[in-house]
Length: 187
Image 1 (cartoon, one colour):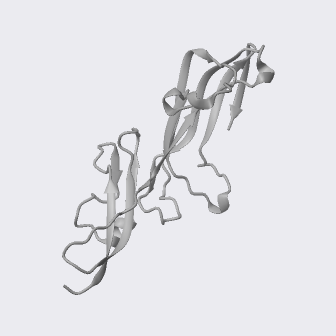
Image 2 (cartoon, rainbow, N blue to C red):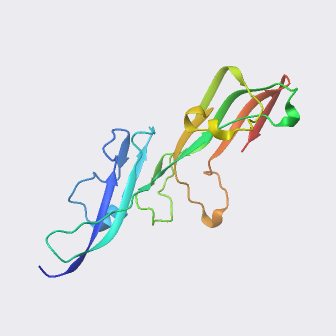
Image 3 (cartoon, rainbow, N blue to C red):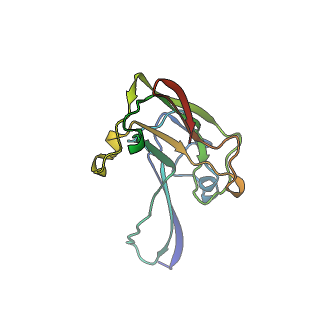
C-alpha cells in the first residue's frame, strides 16, 4: 500500500426527520458537496444536536486509527433569572421569555464564514402562566444547572459581517411585572 493522505468527514445526528439538507447525506457525497452542505430545520432537541468533524489522516497501512474531533453546529442558551439584593422587598414576576430570531439554517462546515441565503428564523417563547416570581440571587451557585434553567433555547450560529448586529441577530426579550408595573427588557 502506498502512503497517501485522506480527509475523513464525519456527521453525527443527521438522520433526524426535522432536519433538511441541501443534498441528501450519503456515503457517496464528494468533499466539495460535504463542505457546501447546508441544513435547516424547525425544531431542536437536546438529544439530536447536529455535529460535524473533519480531519486529514495519513493512510500508511491497512489498519489506521484516527480521532475526528466533532463540533456542535447548535448553541444552547440556558436562561436563569434572579433579582439582586437591591430588589429584596420588590416583587418581580416574569411572564414570558422570548427568543427572537432563532436561526433555523446553517452551513454544515464550521469553516464556512457566511450564512446560507435566505436566512431562516423564527421567534420562540416560554410563557409562564400566572408568572414566575423571582427569588434573590443565591450565594451558593451550585443549583445553577441546566435542569434548573427558567428557559432553554437552541439556535444555529448567526454570522454577521464585522460582528455588527443586524436584523437577523438573535436576542432575548423578557416581559415582567416589576412591583405590579409592566416592564420589558431586551438582552
